[in-house]
Image (cartoon, rainbow, N blue to C red; front, side, top):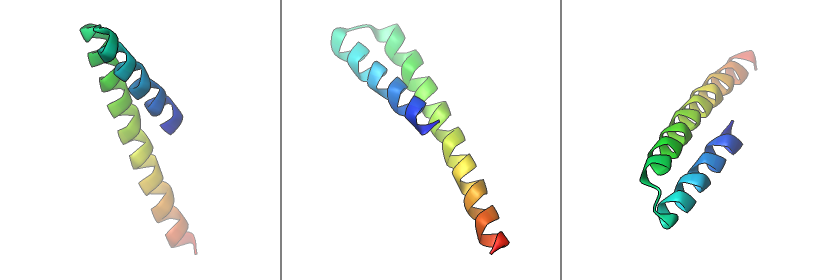
Length: 53
């Protein structure tokens, strides 16, 4: 999931350089959502691993 967030971030950077504003906004939003989902999943797995021993 982190890979997809980085891909959308790269797409948004390239689109911003070219000048496509609409694509940039959508790609940044998707990258943010995927990153937060990844971060939440990482936190849950970290706590589960610490509790399991």
